[in-house]
Length: 117
Image (cartoon, rainbow, N blue to C red; front, side, top):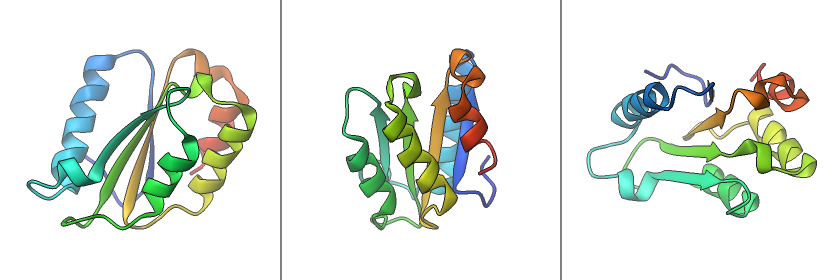
């Protein structure tokens, strides 16, 4: 269950555990019936990262929080990774970002850069 942080990292290959944790986040953060408006999943390489960051910065609708998941971080360019780190330094208080990182991505400088936030 989420605490007061605005940025979380789901790491590793245990998809079932990540899915269960994400369901807990949805229940804790999103108001009943607001998931359609306040829950977004973006796969890097299949989306515009700027759109994902704009979503994080926008106010939630009929809920106290917005929940955004970023997946496939390994597909991100260095510039996109820098954009994610910059967002994590000063995240929106009304949004929760979950970064889904694979086992391979744990060995990169991106993980070291994002981990403190």
